[in-house]
Length: 64
Image: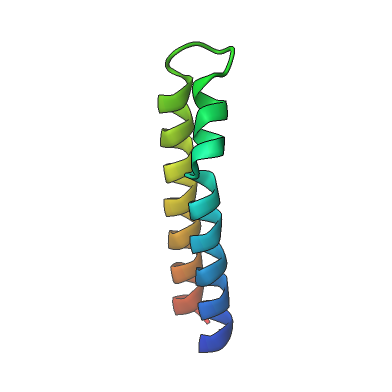
């Protein structure tokens, strides 16, 4: 994979992470009907998804 395309994907991942951890989404997750632990579950899943996507992007870079 060429470097500019990898940089574009990493920037997109950073923007996605910023959106996932923005206050409006955190407020929605905190006020969910699932209970008081829904914010913790949301944060855990969102952070895990960001880490998994970053690992996938960096691993694909080494394969090609």
